[in-house]
Length: 377
Image (cartoon, rainbow, N blue to C red; front, side):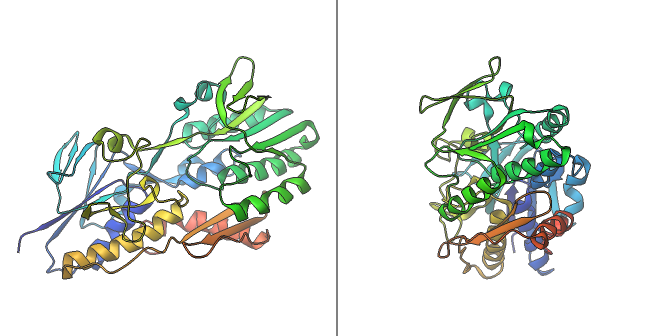
């Protein structure tokens, strides 16, 4: 029997789970070669960057070698994928070409502050290790003034803007300078979050903490010299310290390959997770165009479905699992309490009452995360 080739582009949580679950699910008689292609040799737990900004975690705690997380039967290629050739069923990379019989695109999304003039120069962005450390330094030296949190869409980690705002409120209080800080949260649509139940929940949480908020704030450009935000709605907002959630795009390889839409998002069947028109290609995580949260848990639950379907196709020639839209997100509401939401295509989110227990569940998962990409948790 000819060897079947499964190529996975992307070594984040979704791609790593799929590789490990497929490797573990195959029998010794199954002739399947599994290859993971990733530009990063380290696997990063990205939600931990939120904690780095406040000095609650160190960057070193958020990283493991990708090879240490992958099943030994999985081949890891540390290189840049440069083009996806769907017609010839080949992934082109800087290390050569990789033909496939089945392909998984787990290419993620890219924070793109350069899309808004002045954002890269004028705002702190905690979606990268470098940005989180710069914000940590700025916060350490901050003695008071106006702190603004702006949100651009689309972006990953949908509740992260709320979390950083709630956490800063308490962080400033513990430093004894909360009365010297004006804290303002903004959102670009007519409510405080894209998910309506979360948008209904957030304002009372803001109000009892003395956090100001504004909606219909679509950032057009920033003037770092004058410390002013200009919005598409025609308003101006001044700041002393600016934290921005930048707009995101699909991965460069997707945009360069011309297989996504204008933002680089891949047309994906919301149930089968197939790339539309390609039954042997699966998409998961941030890179899909599915109208659902771009979050680590989304990639996790999608990966479970993709792995089961790949095992079915590789061993029996058919796939039966369907993704139901499940997402679960913890929401830190301060430094010692948290909430969470879970939802799917049929069930809307309903934020839980903040509690210390939920906060500790979040902290526990931060430490246990490494079992997730291994396909154990």
